[in-house]
Length: 366
Ligand SMILES: C[S@@+](CC[C@H](N)C(=O)[O-])C[C@H]1O[C@@H](n2cnc3c(N)ncnc32)[C@H](O)[C@@H]1O
Image (cartoon, rainbow, N blue to C red; front, side, top):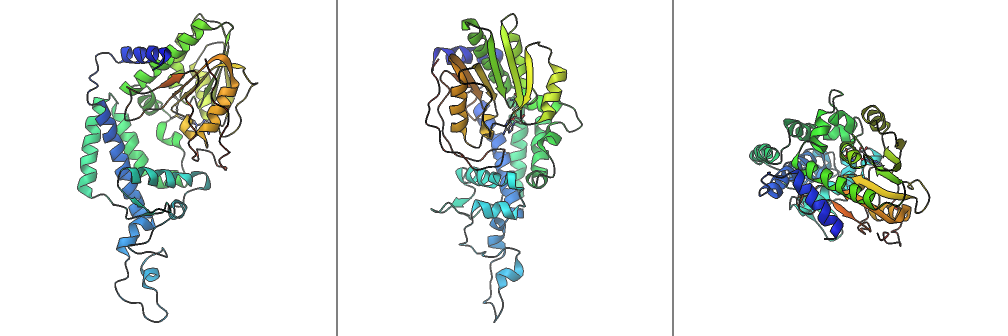
């Protein structure tokens, strides 16, 4: 680890001092497991992956008959049938901007051994979870959330999200309805603030901001991407107290979050703007001193392009702080370094549109 990462890691651990972390990685896996089984159950119920076995034609079709078509809404079924992720997205009725999600789910289920993938990248033999398996996963989720210090709202959020998957995927409801069930921020706060992982990540990110402020030679220009409910912002602003800041640009895809943040934060240097990371980042090359992206860079249609743009926007001594909880959190996240970690995975993000070519520029050195 770099000295900056060491420093951030130290601050993160200080924020969760006294917490028993021995079961943390297993607890995160248990939370993931419930979601994976929920996704498998959803696909089993609502896509041809679950219908393949159920609609096997057992008799030879008579003249002019096609038993598979008679018994199922899906053509091309059978034990050996394999399907493109796009076909499955169609079965689920995914809205155009959410179609990529089916591929993302299937890749995760494949990694977890819950569905097979042929050499052409098509999926088959989905294992629909049994009721008892789901019940066990649910019990373990409860223990896991307690171990990680998540309040009851997290369990409710996970179960509600699974229940509402069809409507979410069809774009009939937005994620805000889940995170702010009664217009109250308690659920969002539970997910992004009031738990061991977030406390570690936010404290580590604040330490990066502090380090950046200490070595700044001019008033800081900071851009936060996908700032959402401001869970990270709330911990970063105190680290800037008494420091010269030219601006802290709080951005998100959704105006909902900008309005909420305007009411919540008071710092005079805060500015607000809508910003979709699928498009170009604002500002001149080398203008920024710090870019913050807390659990949001995965929304980029092309993470490498986003990082390339971030690197171009940063001044020579600038920093980049990006975090994303994982099974290995808190020991490996966040990623705080100069240069930003080069990563060029190609995937579709939260915004529709073709993935651009991979960037050629590496992230800037600090
Ligand atoms: C997991 S939340 C992160 C919350 C926030 N960083 C915090 O700490 O409270 C992801 C955020 O990214 C935003 N987002 C999703 N897709 C985006 C995009 N294409 N461009 C910008 N923001 C996006 C969402 O609106 C949401 O607020």
